[in-house]
Length: 228
Length: 386
Ligand SMILES: Nc1ncnc2c1ncn2[C@@H]1O[C@H](COP(=O)(O)OP(=O)(O)O)[C@@H](O)[C@H]1O
Ligand SMILES: [Mg+2]
Image 1 (cartoon, rainbow over the protein chains, first blue to last red):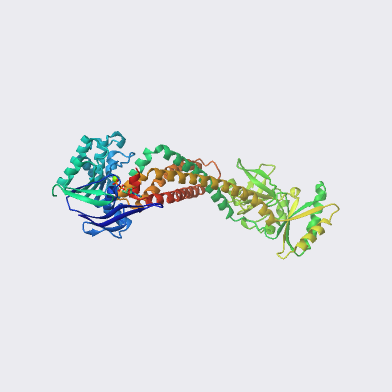
Image 2 (cartoon, chains in turn cyan, brown):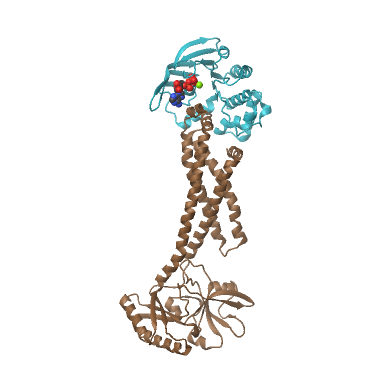
C-alpha cells in the first residue's frame, strides 16, 4: 500500500538546521492498522505529513499503491490526496463557520460530485460515526469527542484507501478516546481501510496491528501484535 | 461551491458587510464619474456645427449710445472690410459670440407651449462666416428682414422641441400676435459654448438693434502683422473707437478648460477615494487570509490545489463585491427610471456597465496578491500552527 524508503527530512531556518527524520524506511501493507509512538518532537507528525503528501522529504522515496510519488504537479498531488487519503488531526481542524454536514462535505467540493450526491455521501459518513442527529449543528456546539467523530466522517466521506490520524485521541478523555478508537477499528476491519495513527497511548497502540517507535527522527523498534 | 462561499460569507456578515458597504460607495462614485465622462465624451464627439478656424471675434466699442449713429458706423466698417482681400466673410452679431462668456436666452411659444432657447442676433453673412450648413430651408437674407414677420433660423434640437419630430419646421410661425417670427431654416448642431456643450436649443434672429460685436473670417495665410494692421485700420475709422481682436479657437480652448479642469480634479479626487477603498480591501483580505491559515491548510490537505485556493479567495471577494455592486445598481437604475436629469439613458447604461467592470476589476486586483499568498501556504506548516 504505502512504502517509504530512506526518507530524510531536514528543516532549515536562517539559524538552525533540524534533522526531523533520519533515514526512515517503512512498509505499510494494505488493510494494516499501524500505530506510531515516540516522544514529543521526534518527528511523528513530519512522518505523517510526508506519507500524506503534505510535505516533501528532503531525500528518499515515497511510494503509494506502486506509484512512486515524484515530480507530480501540485494539481496531481492535490487530486491524489483528495482521492486516496483521509486526514484526522489532534485538534480536529473543523471550520467553525460551517455546519457539521458542510464540514463533512468539504473533500467532495474538490471533486466532480453533484451537490445532491455530496449531501448523500456526507449523511452516510455521519451515520457511520453515529452523528446523523447533529448534521445541522455547528462545531462549537459539539463536545470534543463529537468533533473528532465529525472529523472522521470528513476523512472517510471520499472513501480513501488510507487514513492518516495524528494523535486523534490526544485531546480527549479516555472514554471518548475509546469511542474514536472503536470507530477506527471498525473502519479498518469492515472497510479494509489502511490506517496509520500517531498516539501517545500505549493501550491504543496495542489495539493496532503493529507499533513502530520513533526517537529523534529515527525508527527504533517495531512490535507486531496482530496481522492484517 | 457557490453556496459554500455564500454560507461562509453569511457567517462572517459583520466584517463582510463593511467590505460590501465600501464596494457600494465606490460603485456609486465610479458610476457618477463614468456617467459624467461618458456624457462629456458623447457631447465632445458630436459635430459642433461651426468652423472656428481663422475666425476672429472683433469687439468694437463705438463709444456712442445712439442707435442711428451706431448703424452708420457699422456701415462704415462693412465697407472697409469689404475692400480687404484677406477678409473672406464677416458678420455683426449680438454680444454673445461663440465661446464668449456672454450668453442670452429667450422663451419661444408655439401652440401654447414655451421653450427656452439661446438667442443670437446676427446678419445674413453669419452662416458663411462660421461655415454653418443648412439642414432644411435656408439662412435668412436682407429681403426677409424687410417683411412684416421677422425670420429666424433654429437648430434641429429646437425644431424638435417646438414642433416635435414629425412636423416640418420651415415655414412655421412662432410667438404671439405682435411679436411673431417665422422659421426660414433649420441647422443641425450649433454647439457654440464649448467643445463639451450638449446639443441645445439655439435660435438666430436678424434684429439690427442688438448687433454690437462681430466675427471675421480671414484667409488661412493671415499673419499677426495683418491682424495688428486690421485692428489699427478699423480703429482709425472712428474718432475714439476701441477695437479688440481675439481668435475663436483660442476662446474655445479657454471655454473648454473651464469644463475639463474641474472634471480632471473630480477624477483625481475620486481616483484617490477609490484607491483608498482598494487599499482597505487589500488589507482586509490580507488579514482574513492570515486568520484563516488553518482553514487553508486543511483545504489543501483535503485536496484543494493551489489554483483552487486562489480561485476560492478571489471568488469569495467577487461574491462580496457582487453584493455591493448589486446594491449600487439598485440605486443607479433609479436615475434613468426617474429621468431626473436631461441625459440619455444610454449614458447611464454604459456608466453602469463600466462601473461594474471597474469595481470587479478592482476587487480581483485587490484579491489577487493576498489570494496568491494564501495559495502558497504550506499545508503542513499551516496545520501545525493551530
Ligand atoms: N515547519 C517546520 N520548520 C522547522 N522545524 C520544524 C517544522 N516542523 C517540525 N519541525 C521540527 O521537526 C521536529 C519534529 O517535529 P514533529 O514532526 O512535529 O514532532 P512530533 O509530531 O513527533 O511531536 C521538531 O524538532 C520540530 O521542531
Ligand atoms: Mg505532532
